[in-house]
Image (cartoon, rainbow over all chains, first blue to last red; front, side, top):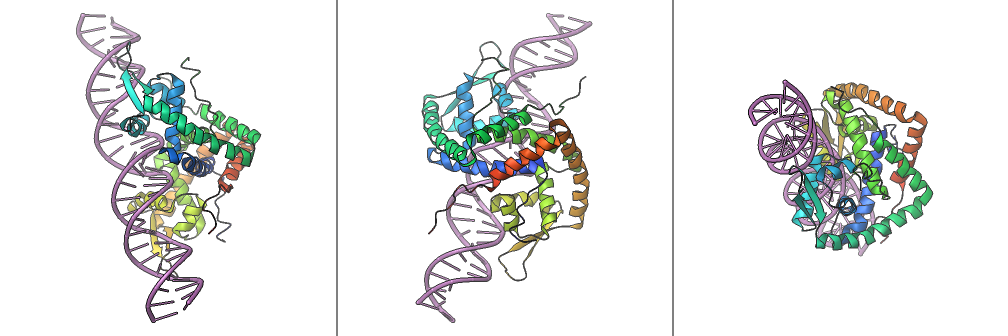
Length: 151
Length: 151
DNA sequence: GATTATTACTGGCATATGCCACTATCAATT
DNA sequence: AATTGATAGTGGCATATGCCAGTAATAATC
């Protein structure tokens, strides 16, 4: 097998998705790096901002991410002073999240960089194609893949 | 914003891709878990097997993954005796990878589980749609997003 | 209202990934 | 051959993510 042909065009949907995610992740990461953030962090800041003081569980559900994973991911952002958590008034189990002043500022900064990457990518593959791709990916994200069986 | 509406249908290609990757990753992870492996490990074993004693760099390139990341990811597989590395005869910089006997056996086992997940997913979204999605993702993976500038 | 079940997180452990610095080789130049 | 430059990996540090085992607090039940 030639080195060139060995470019792993797998039939596995998961493997293909991960490869593309690594590629795109690097691209967006590079783009937002001047702000000192990873693309995942930019996305997280955006979600928190858009969520209006969301509960951790709400963010986790929206991002289809494990709650504890979200907790871990938040730590550097809290440490760096971009995000803070606080207890819900009604339900003391719930911890809500919001951006700090510095977080809002950083979000504005990083979104500028994000936009450059977003546009450049869509110039490359076409806005329509990108939209179709996102639609297909959202469909995957919304699939009911059967979690816990009924009691 | 209602909790239900807050399902994060972002315009960001990267965020959308990551969400889908988490979802699909969990699905394939669950499916192959009985073999004691993650879906990423199944994919890696498969690549190594398909590669014919590939060099680490070849695998990394095929998977669009950082070379050091590959090294890290290999460690548990080496520790568990599924994979081994050895030096190239000609070029002593190169380390090649192969499955051990146990690794081949484990691969055969895990591919059975993988196939169930793969089929179930394609039953859900349709084999044609899945194929189109993989094609689109492969296109992303092959994009030239401008790495290092020419000297 | 006390017991039980459920929900929302937190912390610990493990894998996944990436960047950077360093080492070991091989290749190209002079 | 000695120097210089390019390759291939390794190891350390950091973030990304997930599972599982608690903990705390609300809801449900008797």
